[in-house]
Image (cartoon, rainbow, N blue to C red):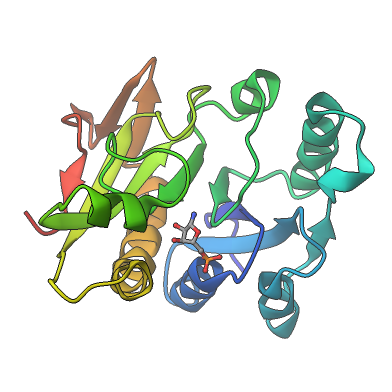
Length: 215
Ligand code: GRF
């Protein structure tokens, strides 16, 4: 494998369907998944990685006294692969300031809402409760603010009358699986950047909602 690939570590907590989309896309793209790290020993994503012979690391938050110690262990596991990019994919822990600083400008997250709407959890139910007409997904640079870093790209789905949180989550997830590999390949091609709290694509500052994949 040529060294021009963008070496990527994916950090997960659960099912890893976004991880799977990244694994599938990486076969014909400019990035390579060097390692998968999970904080949850039961995460199905670990099996997905093993199936593809991708090295895995388990860093169980329950084994650490505090967030700082957990963050340090997580950092150690990630750094074993010396990645160019860290991709959080369904990772359900809040990361501390030191950790985020260590990967500034090369750590991204996917969040199932049209940020800045609905940071945190239960995003689909919150969109339904607010009677939103549209809902969607955002990929953003990770900064110290929870789900608050500059948005790189968004894709959206209509909210249907008959939607439940589950049906909405399913449709958003389909968009997630298309959007995340696309953004990772932009990063891998050297097209994405972060300066302070501003994201750039091809040297141009991105607007607050990032690139709208389906305006
Ligand atoms: C996804 O909606 C992701 O955006 C969110 O967790 C969900 C599960 O993702 N943060 P996955 O199947 O583990 O990739």
